[in-house]
Length: 338
Figure 1 (cartoon, one colour):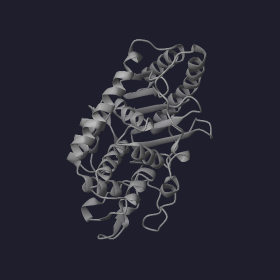
Figure 2: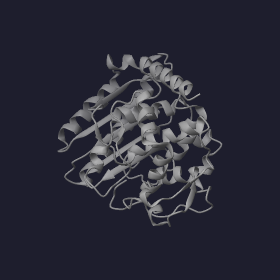
Figure 3: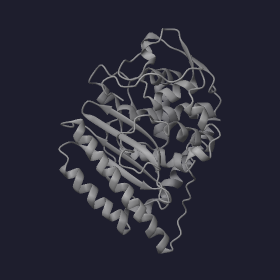
Figure 4: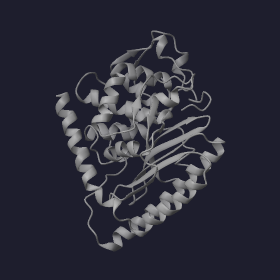
């Protein structure tokens, strides 16, 4: 069964890649403008940056250093979540399965589970929402232990992710975390685009993962410059000199996936302003691309669905802290290592 699932996912990825091949040869005017503006901004940033924007309706995309290996910070929690859902799908455990907290799971960089007594137990559902929505590192380590780092890395490799690698648990106390947790904008966009098209694991899993990502409580990066009524399913990541954000933006009739990664920043304010500018440009030009698509009369094979809030039967489940019967607590701060 596991081999069948991996094969099915691989076929979906190949179809996905093949269907977007035309994007490299031609960009319509709005996407070409975005490409030009983004490259100019990236050239001015006095720090390494990498990004990709993928239009879900047409398959057109653009990027700057999109395949560069970057410090993942907490964006690595998206691959962890994907592997949890893969193992849920094959029946290895269910959402009510309880995981016991061990001393070795604890990391004090982000989240409040690190303050819980050893031996406390939490259902997988609660660990998932804590890992993504308040970026709890201890919850993440518990899930990594449950599914196995080798399994996470193998699944990401099977999905064609070339730069995503977990060489350790989440350990924010040392500099090695930069080397041991790696990914790229291209890898994150691939995962999220498959998820948006309900092709990652299966339709139910994709819906549930989007529901969780929609509840991210850190909204000061990609969501900040967007209109208030625009839904976004995303995950941030940060160190003191690193800011990342990747997500699915449901911009009315112009849905798109975007991932922006920065590191070695002189200041977080500089990185935050850069990500705000990229997000604002992407939204503006994606709306223009939607108008171009309508006026061109061209037919595209992509038909993304509405945000999970209107399609997933469990969206309330992820937003109410059910599972252990307690509301989510803590700020998830811990020095900004998310």
